[in-house]
Amino acid sequence: MDSELSGDVVVVGGGIIGMSTALVLARAGRRVRVWSREPPERTTSAVAGALWWPYRIAPEDRVGPWSLRSLRRYERWAGRPDTTGVRLVDGVHDGVRLDGLGAWAGEVTGLRDTAEGLAARLPLIDMRVHLAWLHDELAAAGVEVERREVRSLDEAAGVAGVVVNCSGLGARELAPDASVRPVRGQLVVVENPGVRTWFTSAEGGSDATTYFFPQPGGRLLLGGTAQEDDWSLEPDPAVAEGIVRRCATLRPEIAGARVVEHRVGLRPARPAVRVEREAGAAGGVLVHNYGHGGAGVTVAWGCAEEAARLVEESG
Image (cartoon, rainbow, N blue to C red; front, side, top):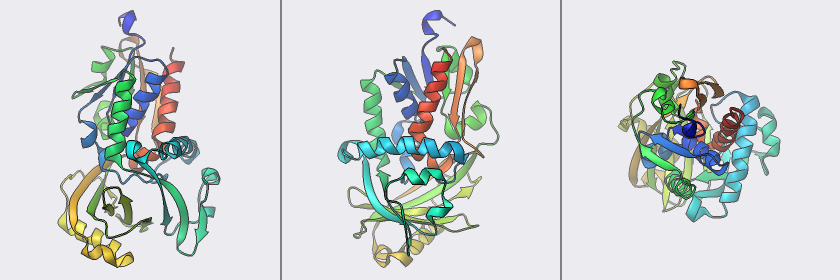
């Protein structure tokens, strides 16, 4: 490794995890580039419903602090929703009670049990706006986001002393890590018939979930699914009909809303998130930051800060 490149960092992956990690590192003074197979608007992150909440993610003792560090950033950015895509919106988690949550819940202002479920005012993020804003923030910090198909982490190690693996589902081959699995999520976007609050409900033992999230521009995101080991990116019309039907049971006005878009994304699930450092190729350093499942937006900045700390500890 050329000594001039030993302090350089290549972040592999251009979704919310890769972009947040790259920005934290750049602002810490590192020379960073991002390699991403897809542009931000075509990553899995762009499909996310993006309500801040620790959902289907472990280990709890680390997820709580990661989530709270991310929450504080989103709360600040909610003051500029048109620019950042972040808003604070009221809603209810059906079937969730305060006493069933971890210690982290005590740090979230305004959580309260009601007859309808756990009421909260939480960050709800328009990911297409948010990812575009992060891309601009990276450019301002001197970070180049390069479209590149990465077939081996050794490719990145050949040009930088530090590689941060934020490849999501791609880590299954790149790490390689067979414990990384897809959890398919399908959404339906409709014209918002006047819904102003969000709602979520997960059906125990089922791959079906029910939620709706109001978004700017008169849109309402309806969901959803959590189909393990399903690699299909094609919207299923029958699944879409079921999503609309479940949401309309709760808000009848949704039944007649015009469908404007179908979305499908594959959440990069793992039994536990992997944020750790190991020796890389050619004497370099490799830091992993992947396996966030359906809560990547929720923990992104906490994980980014931890990954950056591991980079700095490497010298």
